[in-house]
Length: 100
Image (cartoon, rainbow, N blue to C red):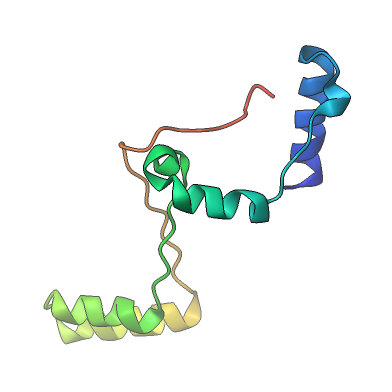
């Protein structure tokens, strides 16, 4: 948790929760096993990330039967500037603390 995020949570607690000094922030180590155990209950609240290597991207272009010149161009472009792709979906609820 970032310092800014923690400050927002503490500020919200001070204004909205009686005895907010009793609010404890539990670290990921605490929640990990519980999230694994109750995955079906909590999985809709997670931001899923996929890691794909540059080689896998190039292989996907080849398997999709892109012309060799386009694959070669992609190889050169990735070497010059790494490829970043953000993927989202319309099935996962946005779970944010914007108001805090």
